[in-house]
Image (cartoon, rainbow, N blue to C red; front, side, top):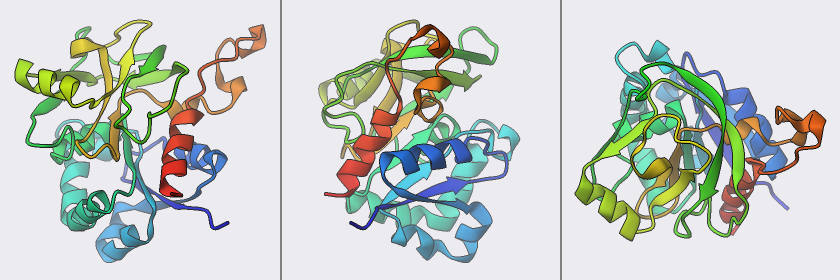
Amino acid sequence: MTLPVAAVLCAPGTNRDNDVLFALQLAGACPVAILTNELLQNPSRVNDADILVIAGGFSYADALGAGRLFAVELEHAVGAQIATAINERRPIIGICNGFQTLVRMGILPGSGQRAALGHNTSGVFDCRWVELKPSSQKCVWTQNLTENIECPIAHGEGRFTCDDDTLSYLQRSDQVALRYISTNPNGSVDNIAGVCDSTGVVLGLMPHPENHVVRRQHPQSHRGVSRGLGLSIFQSGVCYARR
């Protein structure tokens, strides 16, 4: 069986690309990292991918705001190719800085809705483990997931915000993909940790499921705690890409 190719898009400052590559490999994909300068030289590389991933980190040091420069680079280099991938229903996921990038590009939440990822209500960078509840059957990355997911966050601008009309639309259209249930670490409206677009193939989330894909990564694994692998999200995306 030919493994689906997963392109992990990286920029200067990206620091979770190796974690995502490992997660995708465990999930049954053939992952490859592609830098922004490579995309500028050869945008067609995106066309060869069955899955697209925008990895987390601090792209371009978040110099002009979280994800802003990465969004500009991607829009310039492969904006048309990403639009084609969505139309062809190839799964796309943006994690943390990747989520911020997709929001800046206007891909999420999609369908003309407006949202933003603002500073945490605490006003500080926050790194801790959280518990997430999959809450969308429309999203190809979370559909059929029944177990809650435990993984870390690591961000200073992860507070999902939108107006009441947009929130109501996202709830009605089943685009709220993941919610915080242990604690809301950043003040996101409706405890939102991740949303998908109107097609369900694009997911953005602030927590890092790629950092809990094997049991030993859990901070209490030595005490026998074994639950909520983030690997399930990647397995769902890979399974969908194989359809």
